[in-house]
Amino acid sequence: MNSKIAEAIGLANHPVALVWADTAPEGAAQFAPGRWGCVISLIAAVAAKGRTAAFARDTCGCFGGGVGLGFGDCYKDFPGGVEGFCGFLSDGNDKTELGRQIGHGMAQSGAKRMADDFLLGERYLKSPETVKRFLAWLPIQDIPAKYVVAKPLSEADPEKDNIQNVTFFVEPDALSALVILANHREPDNENVATIWAAACQVIGVLAYREAQQEHPRALIGMTDLSARKNTRGTLGPHIMSLTIPWNMFQRMEEDVENSFLQRETWYSLQEKTEA
Image (cartoon, rainbow, N blue to C red):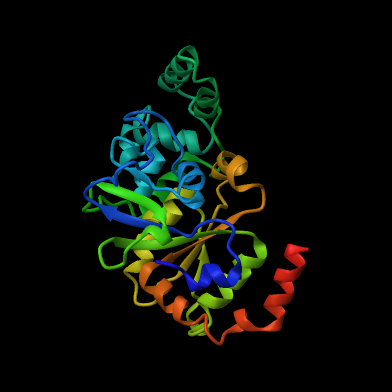
Protein backbone atom coordinates (compact mmCIF):
# COMPACT_ATOMS: atom_id res chain seq x y z
CA MET A 1 0.00 0.00 0.00
CA ASN A 2 1.07 3.58 -0.58
CA SER A 3 1.35 5.95 2.36
CA LYS A 4 -0.12 9.45 2.42
CA ILE A 5 2.20 10.24 5.29
CA ALA A 6 5.33 9.23 3.39
CA GLU A 7 4.27 11.37 0.44
CA ALA A 8 3.41 14.36 2.61
CA ILE A 9 6.71 14.41 4.50
CA GLY A 10 8.81 13.69 1.41
CA LEU A 11 10.26 10.53 2.93
CA ALA A 12 13.65 9.63 1.49
CA ASN A 13 13.53 6.03 2.77
CA HIS A 14 10.72 3.52 2.37
CA PRO A 15 8.40 3.18 5.37
CA VAL A 16 8.91 -0.35 6.68
CA ALA A 17 6.06 -2.69 7.57
CA LEU A 18 6.85 -5.34 10.18
CA VAL A 19 4.83 -8.48 9.44
CA TRP A 20 4.34 -11.78 11.26
CA ALA A 21 4.38 -14.65 8.79
CA ASP A 22 4.65 -18.43 8.65
CA THR A 23 6.77 -18.43 5.49
CA ALA A 24 9.57 -16.20 4.28
CA PRO A 25 8.84 -14.30 1.05
CA GLU A 26 10.75 -15.62 -1.94
CA GLY A 27 14.03 -13.78 -2.37
CA ALA A 28 13.94 -12.13 1.06
CA ALA A 29 17.34 -11.19 2.47
CA GLN A 30 18.22 -13.28 5.53
CA PHE A 31 21.17 -13.87 7.80
CA ALA A 32 22.73 -17.32 7.56
CA PRO A 33 21.60 -19.62 10.40
CA GLY A 34 23.68 -19.06 13.50
CA ARG A 35 25.65 -16.16 12.03
CA TRP A 36 25.94 -12.81 13.81
CA GLY A 37 24.12 -9.82 12.36
CA CYS A 38 22.32 -6.63 13.41
CA VAL A 39 18.56 -6.70 12.82
CA ILE A 40 18.28 -2.93 12.42
CA SER A 41 21.26 -2.86 10.08
CA LEU A 42 19.61 -5.38 7.74
CA ILE A 43 16.27 -3.57 7.88
CA ALA A 44 17.97 -0.26 7.12
CA ALA A 45 20.03 -1.66 4.26
CA VAL A 46 17.23 -3.72 2.72
CA ALA A 47 13.64 -2.88 3.70
CA ALA A 48 14.16 0.88 4.03
CA LYS A 49 15.74 0.81 0.58
CA GLY A 50 12.89 -1.01 -1.13
CA ARG A 51 13.47 -4.76 -0.68
CA THR A 52 12.32 -7.40 1.79
CA ALA A 53 14.15 -8.97 4.74
CA ALA A 54 13.09 -11.91 6.89
CA PHE A 55 14.11 -13.21 10.31
CA ALA A 56 13.51 -16.56 12.01
CA ARG A 57 14.56 -17.95 15.36
CA ASP A 58 17.83 -19.27 13.90
CA THR A 59 18.44 -16.29 11.58
CA CYS A 60 17.82 -13.35 13.92
CA GLY A 61 21.45 -12.31 13.98
CA CYS A 62 22.09 -11.95 17.70
CA PHE A 63 20.60 -12.70 21.10
CA GLY A 64 19.17 -9.21 21.55
CA GLY A 65 17.75 -9.33 18.04
CA GLY A 66 15.92 -12.56 18.82
CA VAL A 67 14.45 -11.02 21.96
CA GLY A 68 13.60 -7.82 20.11
CA LEU A 69 11.73 -9.54 17.28
CA GLY A 70 9.73 -11.70 19.69
CA PHE A 71 11.46 -15.06 19.47
CA GLY A 72 11.49 -15.69 23.22
CA ASP A 73 14.15 -15.26 25.90
CA CYS A 74 17.31 -15.67 23.86
CA TYR A 75 19.47 -14.19 26.62
CA LYS A 76 19.56 -17.56 28.35
CA ASP A 77 21.75 -18.71 25.43
CA PHE A 78 24.14 -15.75 25.68
CA PRO A 79 27.75 -16.69 26.57
CA GLY A 80 27.68 -17.14 30.33
CA GLY A 81 23.87 -17.16 30.31
CA VAL A 82 21.76 -14.30 31.63
CA GLU A 83 24.51 -13.45 34.14
CA GLY A 84 26.95 -13.07 31.27
CA PHE A 85 24.59 -10.76 29.43
CA CYS A 86 24.03 -8.65 32.54
CA GLY A 87 27.77 -8.11 32.80
CA PHE A 88 28.11 -7.48 29.07
CA LEU A 89 25.50 -4.70 29.05
CA SER A 90 26.89 -3.09 32.21
CA ASP A 91 30.33 -3.19 33.82
CA GLY A 92 31.81 -6.34 32.32
CA ASN A 93 32.52 -9.96 33.14
CA ASP A 94 36.21 -9.74 33.99
CA LYS A 95 35.40 -9.92 37.71
CA THR A 96 34.88 -13.70 37.67
CA GLU A 97 37.08 -16.56 36.55
CA LEU A 98 34.33 -17.96 34.32
CA GLY A 99 33.82 -14.55 32.73
CA ARG A 100 37.53 -14.18 32.02
CA GLN A 101 37.67 -17.66 30.50
CA ILE A 102 34.74 -16.96 28.19
CA GLY A 103 36.12 -13.57 27.17
CA HIS A 104 39.58 -14.90 26.45
CA GLY A 105 38.04 -17.72 24.42
CA MET A 106 36.20 -15.14 22.31
CA ALA A 107 39.42 -13.23 21.71
CA GLN A 108 41.31 -16.36 20.69
CA SER A 109 38.56 -17.24 18.21
CA GLY A 110 38.99 -13.87 16.52
CA ALA A 111 36.03 -12.02 18.07
CA LYS A 112 38.25 -9.43 19.73
CA ARG A 113 35.71 -6.59 19.78
CA MET A 114 33.04 -8.83 21.29
CA ALA A 115 35.59 -10.09 23.81
CA ASP A 116 36.45 -6.55 24.83
CA ASP A 117 32.78 -5.66 25.36
CA PHE A 118 32.15 -8.94 27.16
CA LEU A 119 35.05 -8.46 29.55
CA LEU A 120 34.84 -4.70 30.16
CA GLY A 121 31.14 -4.18 29.42
CA GLU A 122 29.26 -1.95 27.00
CA ARG A 123 28.33 0.10 30.11
CA TYR A 124 24.94 1.14 28.77
CA LEU A 125 23.51 0.32 32.22
CA LYS A 126 25.16 0.96 35.55
CA SER A 127 25.39 -2.53 37.01
CA PRO A 128 24.33 -6.17 36.49
CA GLU A 129 21.54 -5.57 39.00
CA THR A 130 20.26 -2.68 36.84
CA VAL A 131 20.24 -4.99 33.81
CA LYS A 132 18.26 -7.59 35.73
CA ARG A 133 15.60 -4.98 36.52
CA PHE A 134 15.53 -4.00 32.85
CA LEU A 135 15.06 -7.64 31.76
CA ALA A 136 12.25 -8.12 34.30
CA TRP A 137 10.50 -5.09 32.77
CA LEU A 138 11.16 -5.90 29.10
CA PRO A 139 8.07 -7.54 27.52
CA ILE A 140 9.88 -10.66 26.30
CA GLN A 141 7.51 -12.91 24.37
CA ASP A 142 7.45 -15.78 21.90
CA ILE A 143 5.25 -14.69 19.02
CA PRO A 144 2.90 -17.13 17.24
CA ALA A 145 4.74 -16.90 13.92
CA LYS A 146 7.80 -18.53 12.36
CA TYR A 147 9.08 -15.36 10.71
CA VAL A 148 9.19 -11.63 11.22
CA VAL A 149 9.28 -10.00 7.81
CA ALA A 150 10.40 -6.42 7.21
CA LYS A 151 9.16 -5.14 3.87
CA PRO A 152 8.60 -1.77 2.21
CA LEU A 153 5.07 -0.66 3.08
CA SER A 154 4.40 -0.30 -0.64
CA GLU A 155 4.84 -4.09 -0.95
CA ALA A 156 2.54 -4.91 1.99
CA ASP A 157 -1.06 -5.99 1.53
CA PRO A 158 -3.25 -5.14 4.54
CA GLU A 159 -5.78 -7.74 3.39
CA LYS A 160 -3.23 -10.57 3.44
CA ASP A 161 -0.29 -9.52 5.61
CA ASN A 162 -0.39 -9.64 9.40
CA ILE A 163 1.09 -6.16 9.76
CA GLN A 164 2.18 -5.29 13.29
CA ASN A 165 3.56 -1.81 12.83
CA VAL A 166 5.15 0.66 10.45
CA THR A 167 8.55 2.31 10.98
CA PHE A 168 9.70 5.56 9.42
CA PHE A 169 13.43 6.33 9.27
CA VAL A 170 13.55 10.11 9.23
CA GLU A 171 15.56 13.27 9.81
CA PRO A 172 14.55 15.75 12.58
CA ASP A 173 12.03 17.85 10.60
CA ALA A 174 10.13 14.77 9.45
CA LEU A 175 10.29 13.23 12.93
CA SER A 176 8.79 16.42 14.31
CA ALA A 177 5.99 16.21 11.75
CA LEU A 178 5.28 12.58 12.67
CA VAL A 179 5.13 13.43 16.37
CA ILE A 180 2.65 16.23 15.66
CA LEU A 181 0.57 13.97 13.43
CA ALA A 182 0.50 11.26 16.10
CA ASN A 183 -1.03 13.80 18.50
CA HIS A 184 -3.23 15.51 15.90
CA ARG A 185 -6.44 13.77 16.94
CA GLU A 186 -5.90 13.04 20.64
CA PRO A 187 -3.24 15.36 22.10
CA ASP A 188 -4.21 14.48 25.68
CA ASN A 189 -3.08 10.86 25.41
CA GLU A 190 0.72 11.36 25.23
CA ASN A 191 0.82 9.50 21.96
CA VAL A 192 4.59 9.34 21.45
CA ALA A 193 7.23 7.94 23.81
CA THR A 194 10.99 7.48 23.88
CA ILE A 195 11.96 4.31 25.75
CA TRP A 196 15.50 3.13 26.44
CA ALA A 197 16.09 -0.22 24.75
CA ALA A 198 17.87 -1.77 21.80
CA ALA A 199 16.62 -0.43 18.47
CA CYS A 200 15.24 -3.84 17.47
CA GLN A 201 13.32 -4.06 20.75
CA VAL A 202 11.69 -0.69 20.08
CA ILE A 203 10.35 -1.80 16.68
CA GLY A 204 9.59 -5.29 17.99
CA VAL A 205 8.42 -6.32 21.45
CA LEU A 206 7.93 -2.81 22.80
CA ALA A 207 5.84 -1.80 19.80
CA TYR A 208 3.95 -5.12 20.01
CA ARG A 209 3.04 -4.22 23.59
CA GLU A 210 1.87 -0.76 22.59
CA ALA A 211 -0.45 -2.27 19.99
CA GLN A 212 -2.32 -4.07 22.76
CA GLN A 213 -3.03 -0.91 24.76
CA GLU A 214 -6.28 1.06 24.71
CA HIS A 215 -4.29 4.12 23.65
CA PRO A 216 -1.19 2.84 21.84
CA ARG A 217 1.81 5.12 21.49
CA ALA A 218 4.27 5.54 18.67
CA LEU A 219 7.87 4.91 19.77
CA ILE A 220 10.88 7.01 18.88
CA GLY A 221 13.89 4.82 18.14
CA MET A 222 17.47 4.83 16.94
CA THR A 223 18.64 6.13 20.31
CA ASP A 224 20.64 2.87 20.47
CA LEU A 225 24.29 3.86 19.90
CA SER A 226 25.26 0.41 18.65
CA ALA A 227 22.47 0.48 16.07
CA ARG A 228 23.47 3.99 15.03
CA LYS A 229 27.02 2.80 14.48
CA ASN A 230 25.82 -0.19 12.44
CA THR A 231 23.51 1.88 10.21
CA ARG A 232 25.64 4.97 9.73
CA GLY A 233 26.77 3.82 6.29
CA THR A 234 23.24 3.15 5.02
CA LEU A 235 21.12 5.76 6.79
CA GLY A 236 23.65 8.49 7.53
CA PRO A 237 24.39 10.21 10.85
CA HIS A 238 21.15 12.15 11.41
CA ILE A 239 18.39 9.55 11.12
CA MET A 240 15.95 8.70 13.89
CA SER A 241 12.95 6.40 13.68
CA LEU A 242 9.33 6.34 14.67
CA THR A 243 7.52 3.01 14.96
CA ILE A 244 3.74 3.22 14.84
CA PRO A 245 1.38 0.35 15.81
CA TRP A 246 -0.73 -0.64 12.82
CA ASN A 247 -4.11 0.53 14.15
CA MET A 248 -2.60 3.88 15.12
CA PHE A 249 -0.88 4.21 11.74
CA GLN A 250 -4.21 3.83 9.95
CA ARG A 251 -5.68 6.71 11.96
CA MET A 252 -2.66 8.87 11.22
CA GLU A 253 -3.03 8.17 7.50
CA GLU A 254 -6.59 9.51 7.70
CA ASP A 255 -5.41 12.67 9.45
CA VAL A 256 -3.03 13.83 6.72
CA GLU A 257 -5.85 15.55 4.81
CA ASN A 258 -6.52 19.10 6.02
CA SER A 259 -3.68 18.93 8.56
CA PHE A 260 -0.57 21.07 9.10
CA LEU A 261 1.11 18.92 6.42
CA GLN A 262 -0.85 20.97 3.90
CA ARG A 263 0.05 24.36 5.37
CA GLU A 264 2.77 26.93 4.84
CA THR A 265 4.98 26.17 7.87
CA TRP A 266 5.55 22.59 6.76
CA TYR A 267 5.97 23.58 3.13
CA SER A 268 8.60 26.17 4.10
CA LEU A 269 10.62 23.58 6.02
CA GLN A 270 10.59 21.29 3.02
CA GLU A 271 11.78 24.10 0.75
CA LYS A 272 14.72 24.84 3.06
CA THR A 273 15.61 21.15 3.20
CA GLU A 274 15.59 20.88 -0.59
CA ALA A 275 17.67 24.05 -0.90
